[in-house]
Each structure stands twice: as structure tokens, then as C-alpha cells.
View 1 (tube, rainbow, N blue to C red):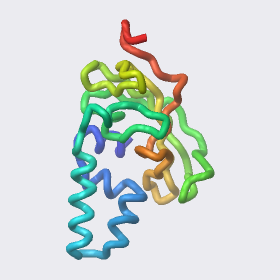
View 2: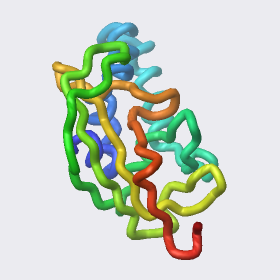
View 3: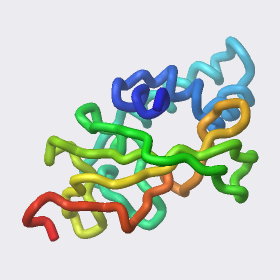
Length: 153
């Protein structure tokens, strides 16, 4: 939930600190180096950049900043042991229901329809870092959990 809230609030330093692949990328650059600063700025810019195309759920996923829009309402609905096929072992996965009360901020499906709510899962490593579980974004989306705004289906 801390990760989702950091995405909602635009707390990019916290998001980078909590995300395994981002930390790994920053750690490879070394501490205090110009390279590290450049990578950090690049990651912050990519997190802050929002486009209409990016706000679309595709088979390869969606960026987390679109899932956790500032007005989205979140609640954990269940937990499980997480996926076993990720770069690092997962110690668990939290499944969250995400409700979008503001249609204009809701993610769209592949056809461009506004999604009213869905359930997404986040895999967490034993060191509490968020694991990448999709080609785009870190979240897994339960396709059968999606509900649309009236008139969208």
C-alpha cells in the first residue's frame, strides 16, 4: 500500500527506493556519480510523464502511475505467496481493488473504454522491494475483475 500511495502522490524518490529494478539500475551506476544522477533524473521523468497512450491497459501491462491515479481509492482484498517466475523470489503478493471515482483519470482498456474498477496484484520480495511482474509496469491485473463506467460496455 505504501508503494501505491507513493505513486498516487508523485513521491518518485520513494517509488524508486521501493522498486527492485530501479534500485538495481541506480546501484549499478555507483553512489554519488554523475551517471547515477542522470539515471535518477531519467527515471523520475519517466514516472512523471503521462500520456493518453500510456493510460491504456495493454496485454503487456500498464504503468503503475496510471493504475494508482491520485483520486483512485485502494483497498487490499487478499494476499497470497506471489509468483515464482520473477527475477527475485517473491515473499508475497497483495491484491488491491482500485476504484476510479473520476472517469477522466480512469485507465482505459485496449478499446479505449474507461475502467471503473479492477483488482491488481503487487509481488513483494523478502527485502520488501516491489518486483517487476509485467513487461510494462510492476502490477498484475486480474482481467475478470474489471468493471466499466455505465455506457462503456
